Length: 257
Image (cartoon, rainbow, N blue to C red; front, side):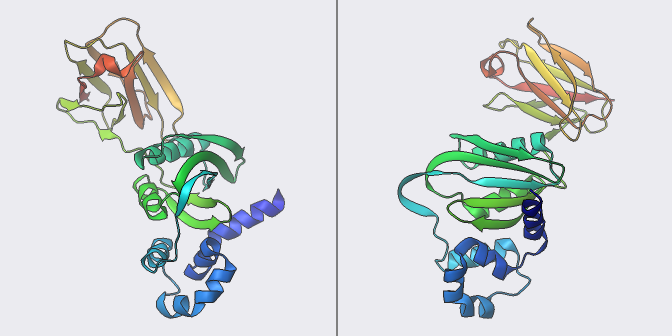
């Protein structure tokens, strides 16, 4: 365990484009093209710049002739297992990767590790992954490829892309029927649904680490709600208790001071 932790720390700390390339292509392939790498890549090139260089030069092979079982691993520094997992699953879904499940999880005070299983005819595009994590306040620090890819991720500024509450009524519509709201400085939230919908509210208030502060539910139909926002609330999740079909026309929300 101690050796593994030292290895993780080294992966995060000692990163340069030449190490990136060896980690992704392997030492043999690196040595074959090392003159190209040293002459074309600045020693301070970022991971994204390095991977773009590999793709542009046809050195990054992501596709197979037929589907394979893949087990990508994600190792998070500054870990918050709950938040990290949500971020990861949301990103994969946004990239069109839906059928996957965890096969191994390890957590301690220094890192959170999760290995997934999925079937695909290609590896996850690393550039899309880098950009998607960046939008969530995270950064892929390094990538290591053996039979599968391992991604090392720092999430010091992890966030959910939530709608910011305003002091005027705003209409929201999400086909998945789940709404994430950033309450800002408002102390109350007004929620309204269409008179043609049947809203059974399931509303969760979270702090910045996704710890639950309060849950409000009802098995009675509601069309207008004014709720107090608990102190330290960073996110509010709004959905129907039973099915997204009950709010298929969307919701209307407003912040109240």
